[in-house]
Length: 296
Image (tube, rainbow, N blue to C red; front, top):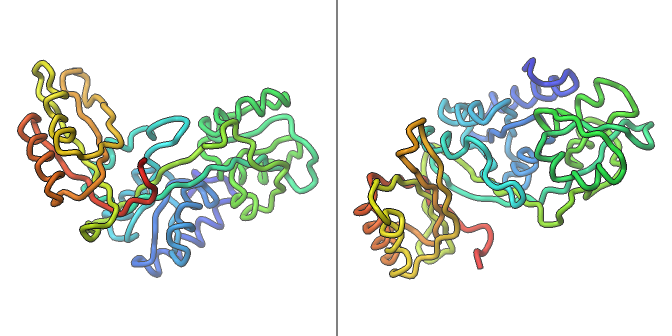
């Protein structure tokens, strides 16, 4: 609790109490109230008891321990790519992906109610980077802060009309700040993809537009990845995402995260996964879930 600015702590305490009273209705997210993850929870589950957590690990732990029935976690952003550490935390958790959701990130310049302009702004480094051109053109000094919504609360606590924050309109509403300007991000397509993690999988009905996510490790042989992925091409399975990452310090074990269209028991997907398993050390399915946005 002490990790949040004082203005945010009372609201965090209220939300935690509400979630503890009804854990079956609790949905965990990382960040202070008003974070874009909180916005994703509201858009997905408007009657949920949103449970703020300081870190991704805390949000995942709350589901594993039964304090929340699911967690809404950002996995990638259209400007900055994958969210750090998620590819490690997700498989280690043992939780299943049961849904995805896309949030159009509209950054707002927030300030105290009596402020007309600001000379510096607090926000998460990614948010500051996404508004770099806007800030530079106006001579506003960017100051890194761990969380967008917490930055908004910090502005209230500091009480300095010359200091603002870059955060959501929802954060302005929660903390009583004024929106000096909305939509200040440099790119209009700024979007974050979230996944919903739960203890039990919820496989969509066959025939519905669906996604399947999985991880695998290739063998250390020539053309290993080419051989491993060949089955998806020959069986006409659309792979919408493929990312590599290293685990450990040896640089020998390359693991991959992938998203494909379809369900594991679809005949074409089943054949492709069978070929993948033959050419890799291991394959682990992370979940199948309804497609929130067409991949064409």
